[in-house]
Amino acid sequence: MTRTRLDAHIAALDAPEGLKTVLTVVAATCADISKVVAGGALAGALGASGQINVQDEEQKKLDVMTNDMLTEALLASPAVAGVASEEMDEVQPASNPAGEYLVLFDPLDGSSNIDINAPVGTIVSVLKSATATPTEADFMQSGRHQVAALYAVYGPQTMLVLTTGAGVKGFTLSNDGDWILTHDEIAISPDTKEFAINMSNLRHWAEPVQTYVGDLLKGEEGPRAKNFNMRWVAAMVADVHRILMRGGVFLYPWDRREPNKPGKLRLMYEGNPMAFLVEQAGGKATTDGRQAILDVQPEHLHQRIPVALGSANEIDAYAGV
Ligand code: F6P
Image (tube, rainbow, N blue to C red; front, side):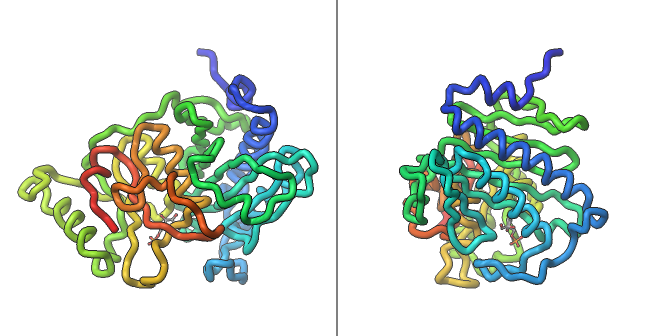
């Protein structure tokens, strides 16, 4: 069997050379991150860093290490105009005179999973830059403007799942360190019996979300007339990966805990790249079952949004806020 490697796939893309360079750098760095993640305690990678990020969250050592790895690799690439990340207060211009791309990332999604040896991931969004000296305003493009989105999931296998706007492909990291195409034309089934939501927040949700989930829980005897199953990995990458593999919906709605925050997840480096991948795989990615995440006009870098994404027919049945 001939195996397609990610570098051959990137080389064959109908895309500018600069974008190919960005994707190559990100893929190589994700392969390096996978080694550090797999090293765990042996790589000195577990535990807290002692620092707090711009979101007021305690950073894990791996958050800091992986953020440094991606930032360093990308800023050194001549195609990059600037980077932004969950772990950095502000956008960072690259000082590359020919830089054309803006790269936004969550370097280690689901970091509460690190110390318990459960899946974590890296999420990346790529936008075109209007200038080689970008400021935050240049990053404020809706998700529809993304030219590529990908995630790497560090689980039992390390996989990289990529879209450049022509479908979604999945690559598995081989023992030799090569990304090999293993999942061609990933498609999300339109119907599902599986949902993912943090049920412990039930009492904080708005009425329509409580009603929707309540109906799912009633199973065959309820208005939906089928039994649903629930899964929650607590790492968006892993929950979205499951949905790309076998369908389902992932919900992180607005809730009353911090009413002035429109949700927990971040638009620019979580919602947008995942929405691009999900739509390219035939699913739907919305804030509330109706408003497409990709059409949300960002107002600031660390903006939060409610998220409801996955199997198209089930997202249609969801009415969030
Ligand atoms: O980035 C935020 C995140 O870690 C997601 O990856 C994950 O889906 C969610 O938070 C988990 O939230 P909770 O703490 O409510 O389980």
